[in-house]
Structure formats: structure tokens, C-alpha cells
Length: 268
View 1 (cartoon, rainbow, N blue to C red):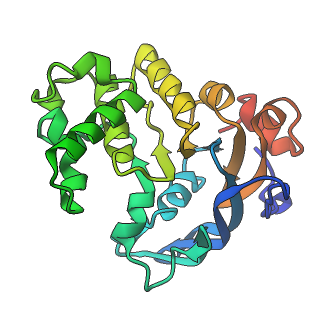
View 2 (cartoon, rainbow, N blue to C red):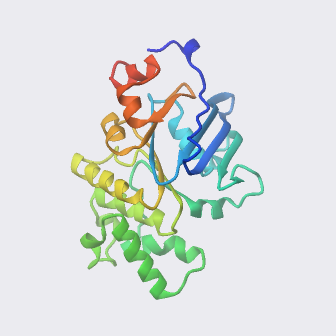
């Protein structure tokens, strides 16, 4: 296990020719007196998959949830620093959180479809945002289910309960539900941790296809998954990011011993 005294918070910048969709600047998150995130500054490149890895309790899920202010729902949480999306600090008090989440969608660890039909799961948020035209809703359902690689499996049973789908199908439905609003960014918190290997592979294939249209940030405990699907990897430890680079470099030529120990399975 690395010596905490040797850890440094990295401020990571993409090269000037990279297009950045989302970034954080000196982001801190507290739960009461406990500082869970300790001044993390990262930039996420457009149309790439970035994996957040690290041992349990290191802050990676807390950081992910901060990116679209899900921590607002936790009474003891306090967040400081900037979360920049297209030049706007979404952590500012005057930001409409619900409008912001149209652009920064989220999929959680366990599939959580609504107890409604497949069709109603996809259209629920669209209707809440005032979209009533049936042709528009039908098109959104078909498009998002195709993007989530689920359309061919469910197109003839859209009125079927989403709860009747398999676990892997439910998770892809949740991805489809998130992208129905056409966000720019998709956040995923261990989306395959509750799935079998075949369903995991299907979710991974879906994400690789989706990055052509979305910027994706994913928390994963699965080192093989991170190495398979992500373009960049950030290694979190005790609330800091201690290494952030192209995934192939993090897994084959890490700059910090703690990173090498973690990705090789020597701790964590």
C-alpha cells in the first residue's frame, strides 16, 4: 500500500488540441467533517471514455456524483470548487440543476427501471420536459433503444413491463433512458457490477458505440473493463487523483508506484 505522505493531487490538463467537454477545478466534497474529495482538478476530453479507478472508499463515486450535483441530495454533503461545463460553472447556486442534468445524464450501479412499460421508461423524462407529440416520442424511443443496442430485442414488446427484462437488458434500458434527452455527457457508476459476464460485455460494446456521440465518465472496480473500453484513466486514492493519463500508459507504464501496485492487484 502506498505511503499517503507521498501522494500528490494532480492538476491534469489535456493538450491544447484536445476538445474538453467537462472539467473540475479544485473540487472538494465533505460529508460533515469528513473530506471525501480533496481538491481534484481534471479535464475530460470530448467523445472519449474516461475510467475512474481506485480502492473502495477512495472517493471516485463521490467525485462522479458531483459532476451533475447528485450530492446535493445528501444533507451532510458540501461541495466547493468549480465544475465547468461548456464555460458554465454548474456548481454555482443560480444553476437550474434539472436543466443541467438534461446535458449531463447518469446511470447508476444497479439497474433501476421504473415500474412502467419499456416505452414509458424512455418517454418519462421527455414528457416531464413538455414533449407531448407522439411522433416525436416514438422517434426518441426507437433512436435511444437503438443507441443502447436494445431495439431489436424489445421493438415488438414496448408495452411490456421494464421489470420483466433481464438484468443486462434493464441496464441498457437505463442507458437508453438517460440518452433519450440527448445529453452531451454520460456518467456511469459501476454500471456492470451487478451483471453476468455476457451482459457486461454487451454493456461495454454499447458504451464503445456511444462514445461516438457522447463523452463518457465511468467508475469501475474492474481493471480489465477499464483497460478494454477507456481512453483515459484516473486513479483515485484517499480523495486525491494521483495519476491521470491515457489508459494504455496507466496500465503499462504508470508514473507512480501506487498506480502500478493497484492495477497489478498488489493492493486495493
